[in-house]
Image (cartoon, rainbow, N blue to C red; front, side, top):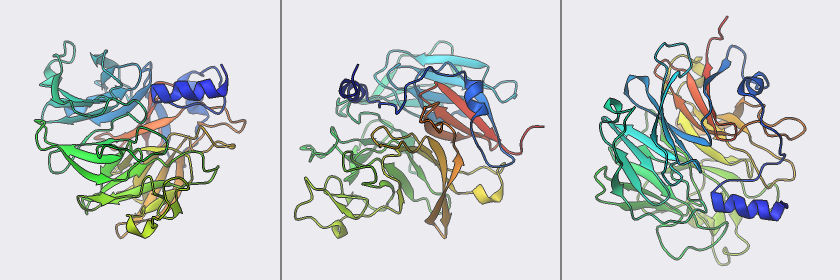
Length: 375
């Protein structure tokens, strides 16, 4: 199959094309090639999870994991506290790209392409899950940027986003390229921000309560444009520039005529172009050294259209006085020197003991990062 057909298939499936195709290695082989800061260890928390994506923490240490084209949602649990989930249950296996998962007060919420559903009293029924109940079903059905991330906000509402149904376009309906929220009973749906091409990750900052989210920039402006974005949402109606302005400074050559980047909210941090920042989490644990406390871990899924691939790592964005000031590599090695892709980080989750989980939809595994290193 030629590259053009591969790209078309990738768009249809909501996935991407890898820089180099190679037979997948065993998870333990991949872990041995990853690089973490001194004192950290990486182990395998769970495997055999095809296209595993977003993560959410339930009660009693249960970890919920969404997926993409596999249509499955998993519940995982490390009952013997050995660092690996030996217990799993399939909550659903026929959903439409159930990427987003969120848990609150005994209920699991799942975001599919066009709807949000819930599973009530899920912890009491892991082995025999109930049928999903529809919460909200008026989201677009487009698969292009159709992944839905899902979180419960500090206000108790469900937050998700609707990507642009294209690489670059001016969507006719206001629902596209937006950040939205809705009550857990499906009422009071509202668009709270626009001009967001595609976000599949957001979190609230400890202390300030501010909502930060990643945004993946448009393609085909070259290897180094536009920068990917880390944004901070402040008010209802805020516009972050797409499709007119990218990265707070790049006027779009197709849709930016007569526009001014100063009219839109700029990013608070700019990543390198095409690294595809997805899940992000402020580290609220205490297991890691103080350098990491309340700082932002970011899963950089990796590029598919750079002449020299980039991303394929977990980065740390450092904050000072509430503002992003620097970026550093936390874990890399998923992209080898010969540009072979070993894995692609998607989402992150801090466990109650302070260790960090990282999902990988390429290898179908979840890693566990802990400190100090096991002897």
